[in-house]
Image (tube, rainbow, N blue to C red):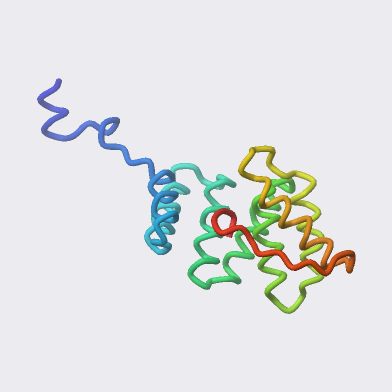
Length: 149
């Protein structure tokens, strides 16, 4: 049996974790390559909201903003509480022609905000931005360097 595995390969030993590969490529700024890996991961897990959100991040980073927004909306149709999709879509809308439309998604993000310790900077940024949009604050905050966008 070992001979056949060596000759033809053992799928379990050679299987690639496309999601993990995509995350590493995204972190390294290789957005097109990451997009390819995430698409392969999506083939293994069709409709996976986490993979779709990573694809939307790639689209945003390579300037395909309409595709990113469409992908975030698709995630939100499947999971209205997807915090990352709310966050990403909110900041796409802020940069577009209808910044007030971002309010709904900032509220959605804050209602379902991740509780991980590293999420605090995103929560703070969303709160500050929401206060600005509502006219409650004039403080300008910079978006976190890494993460959702």
